Length: 213
DNA sequence: AAAACGGGGGC
DNA sequence: GCCCCAGTTTT
Image (cartoon, rainbow, N blue to C red; front, side, top):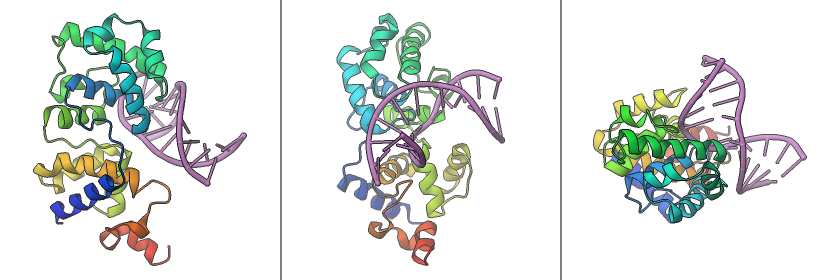
């Protein structure tokens, strides 16, 4: 597989169609972490709006720790599970202050201890906030990897493991980002735009459609 | 391994 | 209005 080519195609399509990516042009690990938690089961457009409202008030873990849950709730309304997330964010602030010196940890095991942080969020933070080689498998990455025929997996965890075997490490971060943008714009869950897709010829799913499936 | 959890957008 | 999308946490 020519990974450079594959990733380029996906990146270009996403860019052309203005895929919404919540961490775009953000480099503060704390803000990336908070946005990533907000993004759980929520589209990136909604995540971006809520993040902007929240970050007008919240700049640091201390801010989250001292705010009332209801205040946080109001600011992040619009994302899924916003009441749960408000509680988690307050707790997140407290934990970061108490146990991590108000810094976002850069180790997977530490990140996974934080409320609202699972594998996907943790890997986004590692990749986007700390520039580490990590693959964050959300439903886009999972779906596209399987459609293309890169992997044949049932769970996101499997997808992460399999991708790590076949994708050269230096491409991990780009593959990550590229597939999310590509999934939002072309390779959608329902009605993917295979007729506009530059990858149909190499895509297991696309080829099966062309045959008349 | 499976289910619970809540809100928004497309048709 | 109904159907579909989107990870973490708990059972």
